[in-house]
Length: 224
Image (cartoon, rainbow, N blue to C red; front, side, top):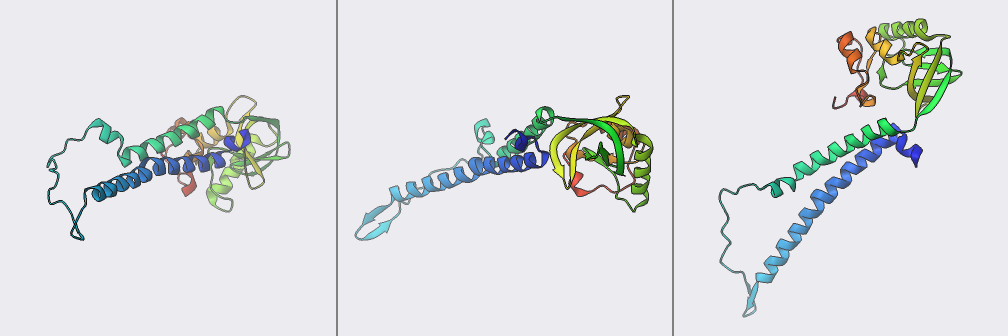
């Protein structure tokens, strides 16, 4: 269960399921219950006389300018949706802070591209980093920068327990303590993948580097 919760991919599925559950419990079910109560009340006030069903002619007076109370506002569907989204974001941040941390240390034996290296033979996808694909000018440049920066260098990585294809996912630091992803972003070779950087560890590097001229895939979009 610990591995399941610590996986970013699984955490996003759990957060999505949590949002759906809150919306169903807080919006759909109360509306169904309200409709059932209204129907029951109408049936209660029906009068049967001479084999005919006669509905009462009087109607309850409604306030033409109702004043929204805090209780009504807190029970509105929009508030529940906002609350569910906020809780799901908090859940993702909690997993980022307290999720599984698997250490991996060794020399970089191979550089696949700008955001994937092999540490002691283990492929590692650098989390929160977005580089253009190989075969593009910026993608090939990012690979060369990473080779210059990390090839044959000793690095220490922290894996989060997730996998993408054959690669582990995590962040790696050089021997002098510098974050590989941060260095790549500051140099303009790559950009920040916001969806996988919820704690905004690379936000300052992005601000220093300026706008990234390369591609920004849709899976990297996030609220901040």
